[in-house]
Image (cartoon, rainbow, N blue to C red; front, side, top):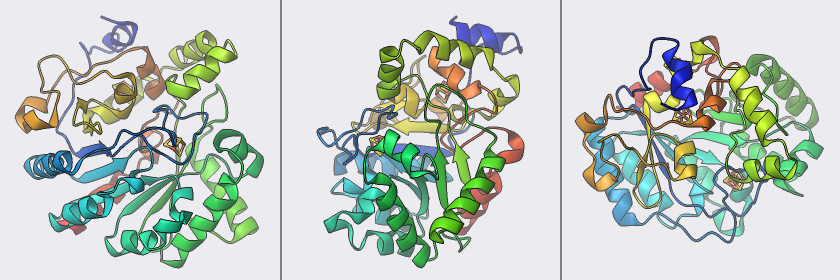
Length: 334
Ligand code: SF4
Ligand code: SF4
């Protein structure tokens, strides 16, 4: 039993177990035109890993078998996978709600001109990285030009109804600029709405706050600053037992670009595939074998249970979750 499992055992749980798979998160590849210094997956323009169409076909079959509420596409920059549009169209054809995690700047690439309209047409939900409403903080995390390009991309998306039409959600993602926990999600959302509205006249649906995980490039940065131990201590000391029942790994499964199955995107970053007897590749996907599976955990899991909690859907504080958005979308999609 590792330290995380010892901690949750104090609440009467022997290991962490999943429920039904409601969301399939699919990593379409590790290539990205950016190279952000907080990227847990260490994506960059140099990465070549990319999901093949044959693997996407297996994901389509799995999504049908499990009747998942949402297929959440991530990367890298998922839009640059050559089969991206074909895959999204096929998922929609099958009646699945689709979400894309976009870095926004990719939408301004020369060959992406029709992408925003494609996303609108397929009613794809968007989750977009925007780590601050201040340029200097975005530049520090994501590099020069990222802020201006992100604002320009949001403006294009707003023009199509994203962020105002309830059927076209555009959620922005904040993550801290250093080794500290995010501030309360709802208060920060108000700041974002006011600042982005006043400065640029742009809008969005909700703000999601995500804790930096001690993985990938963020971990390398912690090591450079000799802060890894103190950050891990902060995460452990901030353990909030109320977050455990809402941990995303309990209702979600991640599919790597090569079809390997993971309990979450963070385990994917660490190369920790599904274990404890459950199938670990999309070729062997069986809903009954993945339900109630024991989840692979480690020290990094304290990043999900610190403070208000954290997941790919933002804080885990139940008052702040947007389950109602998700369930209404799943209903629309069926
Ligand atoms: S954080 Fe997102 S935008 Fe930045 S390098 Fe990683 S995948 Fe690309
Ligand atoms: S890191 Fe992954 S496995 Fe661990 S608690 Fe978070 S979502 Fe679950």
